[in-house]
Length: 372
Image 1 (cartoon, rainbow, N blue to C red):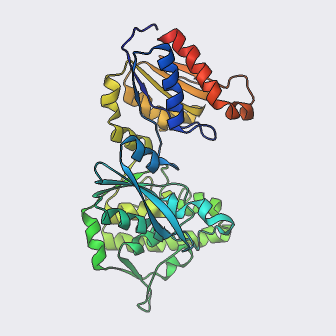
Image 2: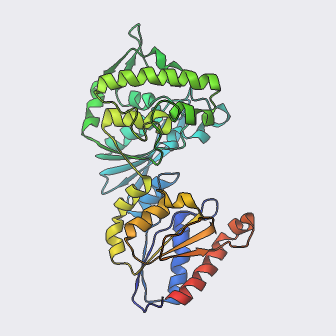
Image 3: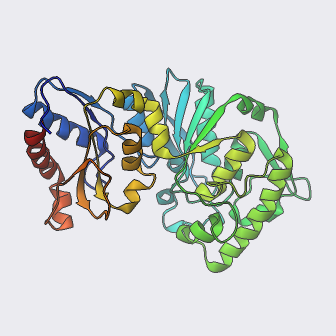
């Protein structure tokens, strides 16, 4: 397809994990376009889907700001977390993994002992800075406390049979007999919560938080059973207190039940991570004016077209001409009318990853020489 000057090109790639972040992918492709078509109008929208770096990327792309705060890590040790503020400070993007990520737990990882308290502190910090909407990314957590730690930091009080207040963790959820609220909690009722979540697991059962994810966080088979029993009891109390029943909702089991807590106490809406990002970019409007849309990721496979960043871009592009740059292509089926540019074809993976920048630049030049 030969297109003349003045064409509008939209660059919206995910990262090439382990090689290039999304911003660098944008830069390399932009330089190639400019070499081959100096008069093209280029818009860059680097993508993230809720994983590590989402908050920082969105703050840069949307001309927001990053503020740092000190919160408790999964074992209570202080750690520094970053919160992104966009939309004139009205929206805060919070990565839960910055407070409870599995790497923070290290070799001590144990979902019976880790707490999500730091996530609640991040939310409290964001609202104290004026945020009226919280976008909370779920994923990569070391916890299985049903968000009890998060809630404790926000004014929810958990009470045992003796009337003592305590902050539950995965291993002592069976102690909870009642839930109370202090005055600090009331301010969150006016806050809009959106969860960036790409898993569909319910809270309990064979596909729930404990059964599926806690072994990855260090739980033994016996611990998995204890976590499941504790989660079942605590979820019943939470349901009774909030008047909700979210345990079977898709995403309730995300981040050790953090999704369940946010749905139950804050009426949080669950959305695909990439859909949230594309909406914040107003991507559909941007795509309307594009003659060509460029996206990409490290490995293109069947999962790429099942709710991931590539899938979101193609759906939102609504038939516009699209090209996908990728390190490797292992997808069996490619959507009609989409160009695939495999930059590492025939090259061993380790070598391709180490040379990703040069390979992408060369592949982009070859493609745009034929296309522009």
